[in-house]
Length: 79
Image (cartoon, rainbow, N blue to C red; front, side, top):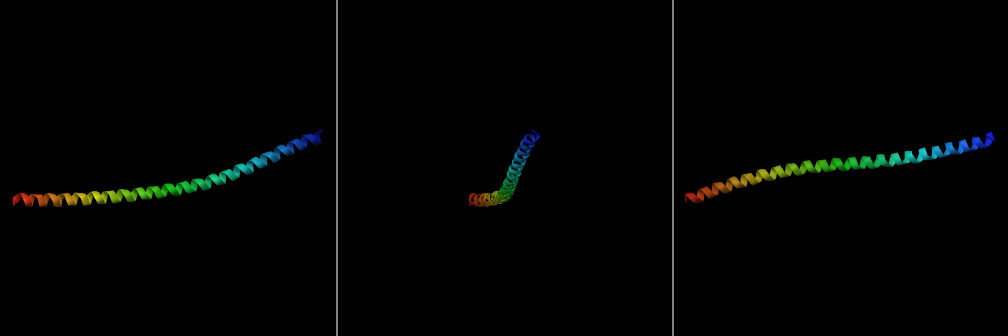
């Protein structure tokens, strides 16, 4: 009788070990995926910052052109 109980216990322990091993593998996969996503987020933030800088530069250029245009229109009105 005790031998059967020992065999059942051994089977449950083996099942627990197998489950733990599978969960550890899944954790490693999720860590790798998380790292990849973190890199994507970092790249997206970098792209966003670059676009914000470019947008600011373009707005500044537009402002300069508007001032030049107003100056030219003012000169034309004088003529």
